[in-house]
Length: 93
Image 1 (spheres, one colour):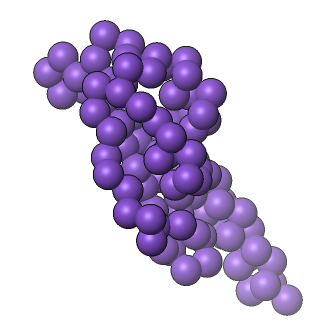
Image 2 (cartoon, helix red, strand yellow):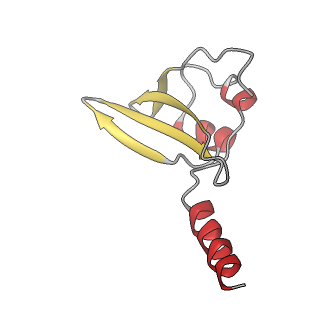
């Protein structure tokens, strides 16, 4: 019983570190020129934001805490607007 409780507690902790849930279908709708507010409204808050020169890289990551499978998508922003979007294959769910 003690092992079950510990396993359950660990699963809850890992779920908290599981990134930010997102949908590739929504990510496909992001367009160059969208503002930070529009991007956040569509995708939710990013998992991380990093800087590279004048650009910001906004990243969404989702990790399945059971299988540890992950998916991610990122967008490059400059001056508060989306500058670059990735091509996301239709097979990505």
